Image (cartoon, rainbow, N blue to C red):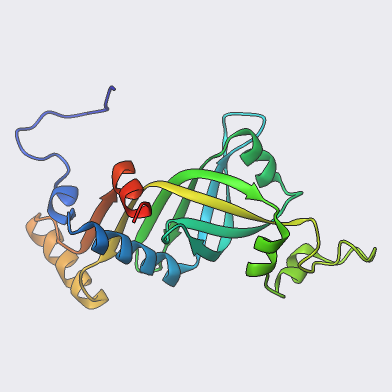
Length: 203
């Protein structure tokens, strides 16, 4: 696999990653990721559009977690464009972000599920405002409305950066870096491989 480089140096060319990356236990990595995802709740869901190789992102709210925490579930209107995208290209990315600059990126594969028991299990009355009531006694935005489905994202890999310092501490470290040229150690930068995700789900 080819890689891109625009320089030559005997030192790490990406010192931020070198200084901030961590490799704690699998349990700590997954639990910190899941806590962060739960805290954010909202993410940008990116799919490949059904009729091209372009990407589209939409803001989504996490509805639930299954699969030992690494199956992320979202409500959807089955008649929306994202379900067309996923029926053609099931690969997906979820991007979570906080105002403080912490972030998580989860990549995997998605399916659109319409089993009524699953929909009822995670149904929220607030969905009615988004789905709408068509006034025909069937498409009413309730748990039996056939338009309400679940997008299940099965994580394959994930990477994230969460703060290791307070906001003030991070600002101080960054300010020092501007003066000295030394990269600040402000985040816990972590990666979950496909093998690690499989190992976690098998527990």
